Structure formats: C-alpha cells, structure tokens
Amino acid sequence: MSESNSAEGSDRSEEQVSGAKVIAQALKTQDVEYMFGVVGIPVTEIALAAQELGIKYIGMRNEQAACYAASAVGYLTGRPGVCLVVSGPGLIHALGGMANANMNCWPLIVIGGSSERNQEAMGAFQEFPQFQRFSPLSSWWEAGAMQADMELRN
Image 1 (cartoon, one colour):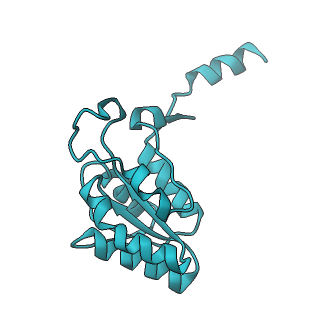
Image 2 (tube, helix red, strand yellow):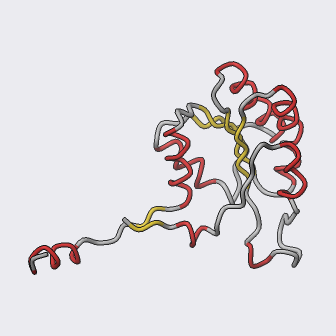
C-alpha cells in the first residue's frame, strides 16, 4: 500500500451507527412495512430510526392492542408483524398477542426494552426477568447488547 493510500484511509472519520439504526435497517431489509407499539425511553430511538427508513410506526394506546395488531399483520401478509414495547409491564401487556401469534403460527417480532445489564437483580426501574418468562412463547429470543456495545464503526 502506498503512503498516500494509507494517509487517505486514516483521514476518513469513523462513523458510529446506533443500535436503533441497526435494528431498523435489519427490519427494513426483511421488508417490514409496519411497526406497532407504545414508545418509551428504552425503545423510542428504534421507532424514530424505523420511520426514517420508511417503516410506518403506528402508536397504540396499550401494548396488548399493539401486539394483536402486529400479529394480525403477520397473519394477513405472511411476513412478520413488528411490535415495539417498553420493558417490564410493557412486555407483560404484549403477552396476549404473543400467545395468539404463537398458537396460530403467525410470524411476529416483539422488540422490548430492558433495564441496563449492569443493574440486573438490583431492582432497576421496570426490571423483570422477561426473557425467562417469555421464552415458551417464542421460537427465538435474544438479549441485545447494551447500546454502547452495539455501536458499529465503518
């Protein structure tokens, strides 16, 4: 590599991409058109990033209705409906829609917030062992990394 090429490469600034944008881009890549939910601090950025990419975010009055609406999209289109909820009580309220989609084999993606990992088992705000409780209703579930760990560098 010539000196000019290496200098040119080092001049490029590293762009950081938020975890919310990574999630939104992954949903867009899968042709997700609609996202239903109730936003709150842990998931607001995901709704905003999805809208920037053209995914229609439909705000609902409660998580149960949001999850039923997302599961209906899965039923009607054969593509995953997406439900966005906050942690703890928000995810608990989505339970009915999750069970409905699971029992009927309708594709559904539920994205829920959580408390910070470094605060687990310390009584953090809206802390709830959601992954352990909801795994029987899901084909797959995963705890994402903390937002700081999800930043990508180009």
